[in-house]
Length: 211
Image (cartoon, rainbow, N blue to C red):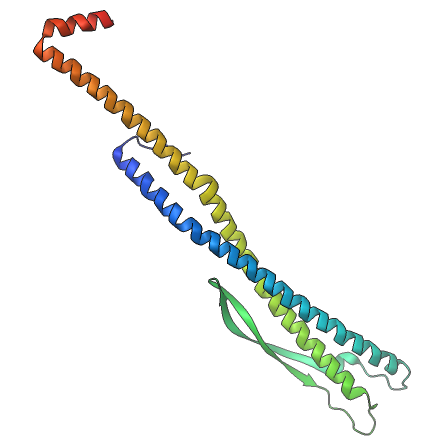
């Protein structure tokens, strides 16, 4: 703990700091709760997207089994290729986050005569998987950014609750005790000085008795 001055000026400074911490603490606590709720909501959305991707993968597995019996088995990874992911800027509780907008996917041209009839469906499934995977990645990015902000906010809440506010309260108590003792001593000195001025011999006798 830093050394504090036992003065009225320092007492006022400590009181001002205490009021400031007590005013900001509820705001930080509210932000912490908001961030926690946002993380929970994003996690649910991410899990939902992941479930849909699992279903799409199951469909692709079905195409793969069909391809296995075909003399011309295509490479599923070449049916559709992810070119880029588009996002828009967003903000949650002061945290900048990307908002998923869509994807740009290049589909392999299919030969209408030589391609198996189910290849169109397989291509749609691969494209869906790529889009869902991209969306899940963006959601995970959101979650990580908000989690980082939550950690910082939680640390500040703990700092205010467990360090700054108790520290200010203790400093105020110590300074008040010191100033009170100083005032009491000052009153005693004033009484002694008054007695000396009115009756020097009596004051001296009191001092000798006290000694």
